[in-house]
Each structure stands twice: as C-alpha cells, then as structure tokens.
Image (tube, rainbow, N blue to C red):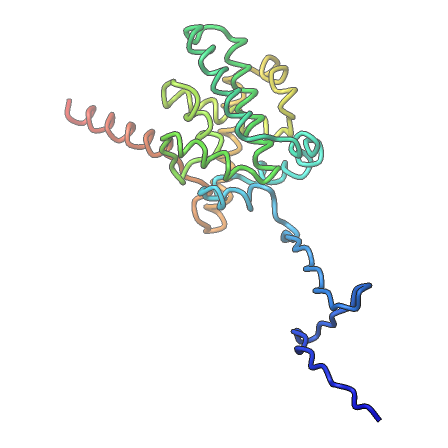
Length: 244
C-alpha cells in the first residue's frame, strides 16, 4: 500500500476568542475590525467636547449657552454635515477685507461679517471641526488665548477693530446663541434688537450666573481677557483719582 505524504500546514494565527472563518477557497479570513463609535455623556454638549479639544476652557459658557446647543444642533445638522473649515475661513477673510474697505461705516457689512463669524462658530462646534478651524488660525500666526470664549477668538482673527468692539460683538453673538437663533436669521435678529440691547441682555445673564456661582460657593463662572483688561482699567482710573 502506498504511503501518503503528510503536508504540514503552518498554524493559523488565532486570536483569543476570535474564530477565523474560511473563505470560498478554504483559506481563513481575518475578521473585519468593528467600527469604533464615540459615545458622549448624557449631558454633554458640542461645546463641552469641542472647547477643550480646541484649547479652550468649557467653563467659558454660562448655563443658558449650554442649554441652547441641543436645539441648534438639530436645526443645523444638515449645514454642519457639509461644513468646510477652509472654505468658511476664506469667505470670512474676504468679508473682512470688504468691511475694512468700507471704513467700518456700513451697517450691512458689519451684520454680514457678524453673521458669518456666528455661522463659523456654530457649525464648526456642532460638526466637531472647531479644533481644525482654530488650528488654521494658529498656523496663520494668530495668537489665541485659552481663557476667552472661542467666538471672540474668531472675531479677533478676522476683524481689525478695538478690543472693546471685539468684546461687544462677542456678547452679541453669545446672546443670539442663548436665544437659539440660527445663523441665517441673525441679521434680522440684530436689526430687531440692536447691538447695545443684545450686549446689555447678555451681561445680565452673566451677572445672574456669577451671583448663582457665588451663592453656591463655586468658582467664578468665566474669566476673559476683556474682563481682566476692564478690571485693570478700573483700578488704574481709581489710582489716578486718588493721586489728584
């Protein structure tokens, strides 16, 4: 009787708990890796995730801002899906040049640039691309501090104006956010309420938030370069009055 020659096959690389299924040719196939899904905490907001990734302190937001994200995220989901950071930045830079060319006098230009700043901030945060946007600005040489609200950083990166104006515009956009105003409706909102009224209303919300934090014995709700500058200015003026 003829003897059959045994053919030694190399051992299969098996992973503990994983069975390699043979394909049609009888060869084992590697299991397809499972897609990783990122799950957020139940109370997480886009900002609470995106702010730290972009180098900002999430405590910059007050409670009214955090509670507005869920509705805005639902309404802007389609726009956020198609958000392109580079295209958005280029368009904003173009609007900035037009605004400078108009000698900062045209209200329409001002509202347009505020609308696009607001749109960029909202869509970048909701889409998860806020770190990418901020990184582009940093690569272009913009120094961005971590102790300011990101919308202030976007304003500063695009508009050459006074620090006081940057601060006021930031308050306006943050107030619009608390009112869950989508970017396309911002200009109408500003025409109806006005810059100064929006600033005053958001300052009231900040004061209420600070009083609540002080009552609870908690830390300061938010700090910013603008507030630090204002405090230094008040101290300097008080010193000048004392010297007289």
